[in-house]
Image (cartoon, rainbow, N blue to C red; front, side):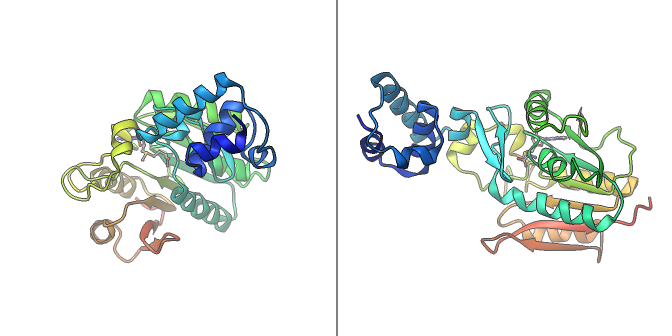
Length: 276
Ligand SMILES: C[S@@+](CC[C@H](N)C(=O)[O-])C[C@H]1O[C@@H](n2cnc3c(N)ncnc32)[C@H](O)[C@@H]1O
């Protein structure tokens, strides 16, 4: 079958394009420019088997082993959460905070997963020297192996330090910028999770206790004790009021909440004062 016919027969769409391009070993733009090219029967079968897996909810990023995030190509597999486009907002906020600091920043990424935040931030500053280092911690040794691949692939392994740990347990560094995209899906309330996500992505990357904010509560206690410059974190749809209450309790008057492009409360930014 020809490329154009295959896309049509499979129903088209972004997933079909990504999977067909992967199977043939070309970029997506190649497909549109070569619609009449014949595809080998073996590759055709492989493409339809991948389409079937995607239809059953398996993330396309796991099938092809890659996901674009903040304009960079990340290696991903089922040991890590697939980086989400809304998380790019965290990277933007970290970059702003580093620039405002005006001296080389010490940055920490808590719950680094694929390393997408730590590596994107490091890449932004690797040549300018505006960053001292990016420490990145995760409780999952498996996830850290994926993050290591990404730090190496993106040429930032010299400034990204990966640690296995439980939030900031045992850490005594005072960071200029701390960023966290912790598991925040609630197990009792705020249980906003799609079937495919729950079935395929690591549970330890998704769930954050009763209302989803247990890990943030523990992190807030830890950073309050240690002191910090700025703390930036992501939460989910429907948690705006609860996170506001939690932030009020730990950092009264020192935080703002920002909306994502869809107009949903998504990110909190806390100004610390380094004192402990
Ligand atoms: C929602 S994922 C985010 C991954 C990545 N930062 C991103 O934005 O795509 C949360 C990550 O936190 C890690 N994690 C869960 N509990 C943790 C804990 N107590 N301490 C450190 N990391 C934890 C998980 O293993 C997972 O990799």
